[in-house]
Image 1: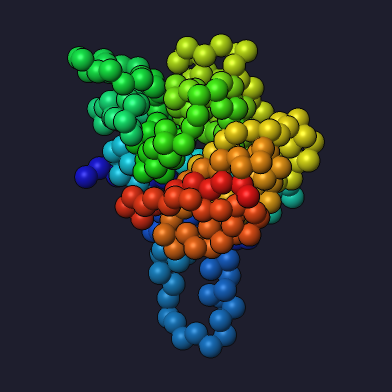
Image 2 (image 1 turned 90 degrees about the horizontal axis):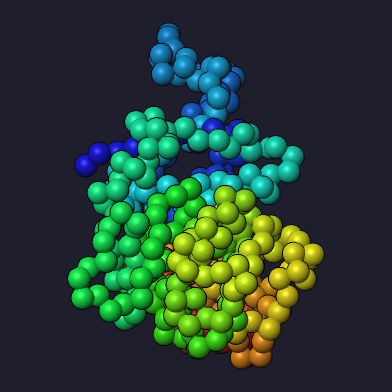
Length: 322
């Protein structure tokens, strides 16, 4: 298997929140380089040593960084897009710059070639009973009667290949009703918005904290045949901006959010204000270790758990507002 080496530049203070975001995505192996390790070593008065290893000397003037290795396949591409979205969320919330520059560098492949070099891995995939997701360079399989959702790998998370997206779309298919007003929180590539429209939604609103996600969501909705009169997209963080929540409004039939556990927990007090009575909530992006915590938090905010599904350590859940 081929691997891509990705370096994320941060600060000593940023290591813990950054690695927490990566762990939440299922990325559990890191190489951490931090100049503070060298300082701590020198200040260890009880240490007995005759020389300093070259690797440790290399820490003296290094910029703090977390390095991860992702497979150069479909799963790795989706993880990288998800990681970039998580890093952008972390960066947006770090108003004092405590976590360093939070920029990334790909060592074994140019970032702009990431999607192109992996085109061979992105094939049409069937989701649920009614959707087929395909990249633009692949033809629709002969005789296919499913609704076609066309989406290409981009800088925002979501091409349908990741288990969290699959789980979320399957729940949307089962529980959406014709003409539903839908809110997609943390829209990423906009794949859930497009899927909901194809499955019968009457109108979509979508929000994300990055301008890339807003641009790509709009592009993907238009590419899949939906005019701008059928959707609205907003940039911002609903957990910190009452003004944004007011602008988005309420009365939604369905809210969906495919993010990570910590963000879902932070959003949970606001889900109810977006939904009409007995409105539907679908959340995804939850690793097994955080499942109980997330479910209990959402239930405490006035929701009844109706369905919970798992696929390879990832979970999605469907709730109804009480």
